[in-house]
Structures are given as C-alpha cells and as structure tokens.
Image (tube, rainbow, N blue to C red):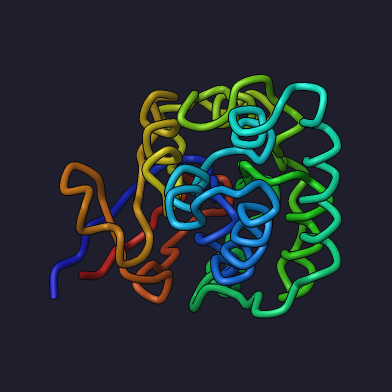
Length: 216
C-alpha cells in the first residue's frame, strides 16, 4: 500500500456528495422540479451537479419566476431530508481537525446545508461560504478564495475535498490542492483522489502544518 502526504495550513470541504451523502435526496427533488417544468430529469441532473440552484434555475425559467422557483426548491430541501447520511469517515476526519483550521464551501443555500450537516452530527465551522455569499458559483474560484480570506489563509497552503468536476475546477483555479472523493475520481487522473475519507488520516497539527496521509 502506498501513501501520499500533504502538508499545509487549512482544510476546506464541499458538503453535498463530499461530507454528506445527499445525492439521492437531491436527485429526487431535481426530478420533481424537472417534471414541474417539462424538462428531462437525467439531463437536468447532469447539468445541476456542483452548481448553485439559482444558476441552474435562472437558465430554465423566465427571470420573473427565478426567486419563486428558488423558494420552492429551498422549501422541499428543508422539509424532505429522507436518505441523508454522513459520508463514511467524514465525521471522524472533521472532528480530528482543530477548529479554525477548516471550513466549508458549498453550492447549496446556507439554511439547507446547515440542516443537512446537523442532521448527521457535523459541527458547523465559523467559515461556511454558501450560495448566497458569493456572486459567481463553482467552477469560478470565488467561493474558495472567499473562504481562504475569511480563514486568513494562503490559498496555496489549503487543500480542498470535492466530489464534482465544477468544484475541482474552482479549487484549482483558486490555487489550492484538490482531492476528488468517491467513485468519480477515476475521471480525474490529474488530481489526487481517495475512495472515501477512511483513506485519509490526520498526522499532526497544533499550529504546526497540518499533515494528511492518503492511502491507496
């Protein structure tokens, strides 16, 4: 078994599909929304993955209906949390990192992602950059650069865990190390990847550089 080691100062995580297994729930909501508008559910799911709701909704409905439809999606997301679980190893990794040295960057809205995180036992960090906090969603690097600024971090000393192509692009455009988590990692040979957080171990921190071990 080979091991890769990363050393740096701060750890950033995407949420949906990375720390929280919510894809089945999001897929259910997306298909319902697609049916409401006579759209193909499969095509919409592919387009939606990793993007903010407002960026997708704006593409498919008239501008005067965007906020109404965004509110509909927010409402169903808050009410229906069936199927949401923690990604294996995610809770253990997050709890092992010193508070103040990690944060979250998500394409989801704050109320929705906080609800999902709390439902499976994650702590809520001081730095959580959500959809409404930025003007340009992933793959634009604004979200990750904003998180780095809030943490007082050099982007080059940050590592990002993501599950979506748009998130990986955003992290790399921000000048950060990127790790793809999950089965989709095979599609990204030019970035580090792990099958699950069970393959990631914190070695040391306490104001020293954070060292993470990645086992194949």
